[in-house]
Length: 353
Image 1: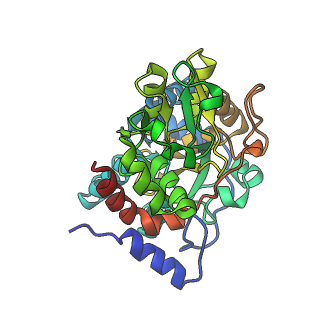
Image 2: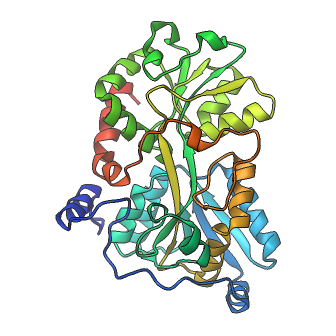
Image 3: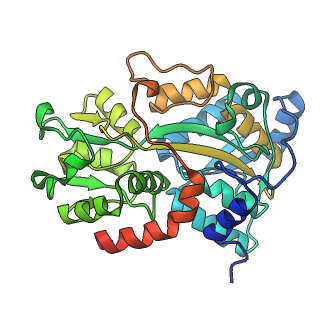
């Protein structure tokens, strides 16, 4: 039997303690901010490797890993990529089996931090950049994680298959019979992005919306990275959810895709990164976490991926839409934590997947 609290148990405990936000406070104040020092770099080089569990698209994670390796020669980045919900299961299984393989983890379901923190699996670590340039809502109060990326789950359409004036402008528009058999979307049991987006849509529109959507013969894929690709290939005319940044990058590459920011609001997803207390390469883990949240790395990441940064000094790439210009749905990781199992069960029943 797995030795951990369920998502629902964790949330009940946080409510009983009068806590809120995306991380449950169970420890003392965060440690003093740390800097990247020659001693840390040397200690990391002696370890020689950092193992990153990541929900980022594999090409994005690999680009990030190569940038780190170029900056710190002699330290390899091993990336294990999967959907966040699958990563959550993998970490749980590894800890139950006394396997300690991962150093650092990035998830697209911020509610995972609540569980891992409650279980005592995370190590506190905060850097000068995180302390000075990340608003409190984008960092754990005890220093257990920081938001490495922010992005959206939007609608989109193939411009060769759909005219702009006929494209859906809202979530409600996707229920129009003319889109039956023409849409693609991700799965909340695999993707943390889709889990988070589904929670926000259920909160705002109700399960009745998904009951109607499930009758539209929607192509079901796993990752939030898949719908933009299906859209660009013309396999479906409309993306019912998926990551917006994938659409933006495809459009910039000349593909016939266009993002839509629905009238009701666009689900917002934050991707926090944390260090495991049992990290086999603890110094390399701290170095990677510190490097990842510097202004320089965050700017590089934003420019390359078309995502958004919580770092106050990072600017949007010229020509791209600013997140401040988009009507957003509010993220609630604690709410996701409480509703995750219900979402998986009801969604699977509705869409028969």
